[in-house]
Length: 194
Image (tube, rainbow, N blue to C red; front, side, top):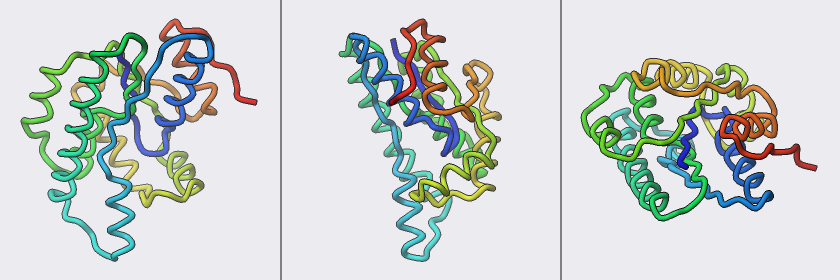
């Protein structure tokens, strides 16, 4: 089974994915987490440190190349794995970012989506941008603005694929979100960490 987690930064994708994987493994199941990052955090931190802003098209080109490469490798790894595969982010995230940045959808990403194996489920971790921003500020590793997060949220909601995503309330604690994911996948419950 392959599932994909999407959502704006600060929605808890990585935390929920790790908790879900740990819960499945703790009960003797096989599960693997595959990250499909695009290097956006590193690029934004580097740009802030250097005091420069990357043009939207250049930033998108770099992110798209990295994300496509990661997604293709992840799908190859998933095809050889017998168990639950959780993909943290996917090409849908890049499409939402393109929309958020006022860029066209393009042809490459939709073409790839039509040819890659379709995930068994795409879970969208839905959260208010203000709460996501609060989480980002608390962890101190990103430089997203509230406006960026709101635009990213709108970018997701404008995707034609969004109607088929399973929306989850990501404002709850991570262990509750992981338990919700497990129950929707008919997996054993994930308990709150000690």
